[in-house]
Length: 104
Image (cartoon, rainbow, N blue to C red):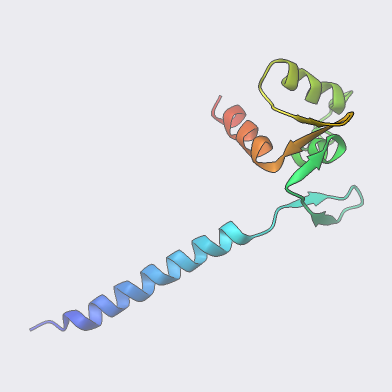
């Protein structure tokens, strides 16, 4: 007769390991390139220059990354929040934008 307790324990421990890896992936903090070869923690709400760095618009050959960001905003592909005179972008809205643009 097969020892089902032993195989269930192995299965449970593998499932727990996979779940812990998934949770660790979710808890990995996002980072922004700092422009000097390093990285800094990424805030939840980003300024326009931070959003440009987050989307890497400054590294892909755009003449004016700010104008590119404005273009996506005007085409309603990217949502910004205005606080006072400044525009801010949530990391979630930037991630959603990247998902939509990736799926085409």
